[in-house]
Image 1 (tube, helix red, strand yellow):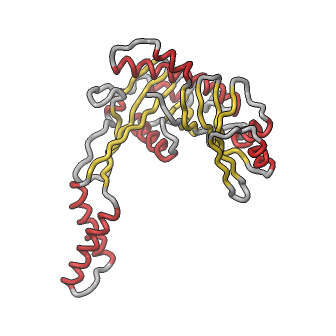
Image 2 (tube, helix red, strand yellow):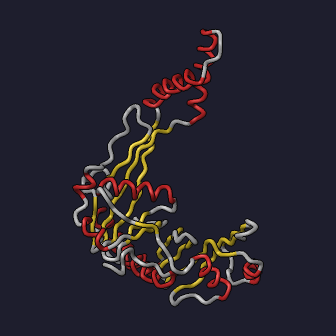
Image 3 (cartoon, rainbow, N blue to C red):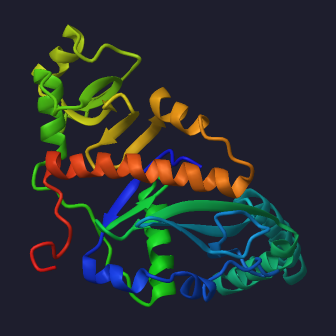
Length: 305
């Protein structure tokens, strides 16, 4: 269950105190099945799958939670086709086109008929809360999905003042300097992809499987393009693409990490999840500590906690 994309939030040590026992709070917002006339529902499910009732799993200072959702698949084309059919039939019966209010009422009737027949698409979003250093880590690169999960946590807990990352060192400028001069922080090396943009003209260059220290890439930087995404490798243990929004994409743990996991035999799915989660949070904790130094990421209320 290694995460593949990371959207990060921070919270203060005082905000961490109510997180000691999450299960009762999450149980009040557990996922329920989509009703016949509902478009979607959202709530927490067990990280261990549908056969478990445990809604959180803690290893050390990190607690894993899973937000589930059910969404009805009802394409607009299907709704519009049925609505058009009914509009034509009703217009023929009345001898005139329907007005706006009548069209809206007829559309509501169509939705009431079609929704109970629609397929339901389930989805899951994993996240973990690391209380010692105040990290909320969500397995998504979508800001919309991350905000929805954070809202669900706030609804369950009553309050959870997690905040987006704030950097004292501008990530775009710093990563542009790394790429332009080839001088990266200790333990960090360039990967093989990047996205360069011209902030003024809007031109975009995307490189994949490319030598990033090549003259071609350097030429784009000299023309004023800046780094918006940069492929990196951290201490020969993980590779990823870091965005100027500090979202981590395409996270992959390298062989040295994978080998340490494979060396330990486990006899159940629960034990496998436990081992992977423990290893992942340990590795990411080291990466996040370095990111704090690179970009000047302060924990909220760090000066007052």
